[in-house]
Image (tube, rainbow, N blue to C red; front, side, top):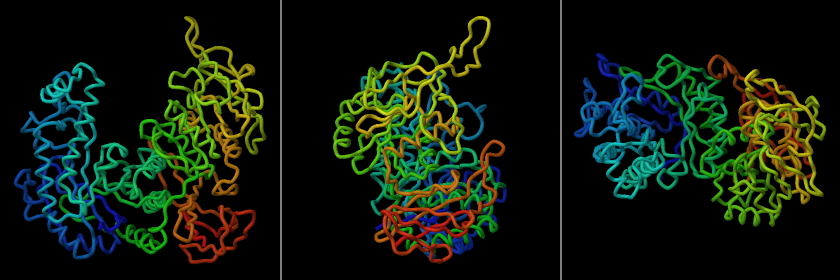
Length: 638
């Protein structure tokens, strides 16, 4: 049985040639001792890096010049002696040492280019995933498994178009068009998946295995768990929540890999600080994920003592509360649907709105079972074919509720709404790019004005009995050039009789006529959040968490245990600075705010301080009066 993977550290070790003191101050015993002191339970440890060097005695690879002994094997033994698991890391998507000698192993562009060193960085030369390179990696995998690792982390196995003679010949055998970019991409996707299947066949079932690069859904039956790598400092803080929601629908075990770096991977001299690492780790925990700290080991040394003093305190606290968190999982009340099994801009926008409004959610494929969710959201472009129509019909007939936006809910041909529950009249897409809306309800704290949609709208009219919550407003002209002026300034003009947001007569389907979630991801319009929030309150009157007195910047989720719930609250939030975001210090929430959780409980205990908190129970909700919170808190409801 696999020991639960948690409190992980991932060590990159991509090492260039000409490190003349390579390994001089590396000691596996001292390294493992520091990890043990830091409450680390697992590490991803380098077997072969993306430059192409191996860090163990290899018969098929290229040991680093200056390697003496067996860095990986010694680390496995030292860590195992202290109860720390070791996952062997191989970067299968890059191997410069091999490819500089064997160009016939390389991926080829359609113009015959094999590598372009002017591109710089790492990716100027890549292997082909169909041919002899596959066998080379399989032999590496066998060698690494023989060292007693607890699993494998295979990096960079993302599908990449290749037009080498081997790939084109195989495509012809399969009747594929070698001139078609779509066919080339389809073959590349097959080759990457086939490569992963060959590796999977070599790895015993009692070992962890993760293929980074294959989409989470594509590798669902190959991976032992799901991982989300996100350096929020340069990828943004909207990426992880949506990806976590997607992973929750696919994997029982999930990890969030952040980075200790100030900016990006390979940043030896960067450390974003304890508060920032804590923010990421708590975001992982409250989203139902374990934690991995991304690090890069110095080629001559062990890990940085100063950083791991912080990690010791953070992971020590996480270990202390694992008796509650290990057996609790994220509780979602809303299912966001996706057509292709990925989470894009619309899902990121939806995730942010829902998080700000304190709703909980998962992202599911249209193929998945969403019948257990009180509310389903079709964000922006989820058209409805016959199969999905039947599923929605069954869902609605049993009391389900649906919110759609943009082209969602329409037929694939976009000639009208696919299901009669959408009893609205669709008259096609607005010819004007710019449109506005006015909300027909009280918006406390928000100016009652005409808000721009920031996306082209559909022209939707209400039928008898429907309720319109926002009216469509046109502009004077389109944003275009007439030979004299570029019409950039496009003010609102008048109402058109169309609706921008409405609810059907049955009260179980709501629709926003423009892609509100993609627009929110782009603009963070407060009007968009208020509009969606109103529709959600109509469709889902008994939400899981009621937290009107918490800031929009805070986050709240619930984890379900066997006989308890964990209310997770995070009040720290990132600041946009320079080219990315950062967390310098924790935000403090004053004592006295109240949060209500659906369900009736007798006690509420703050896990970080052990304090019993005042509660009241009314109308099926338990209201907790919060203490002062610095950064984050978990409250156990029993």
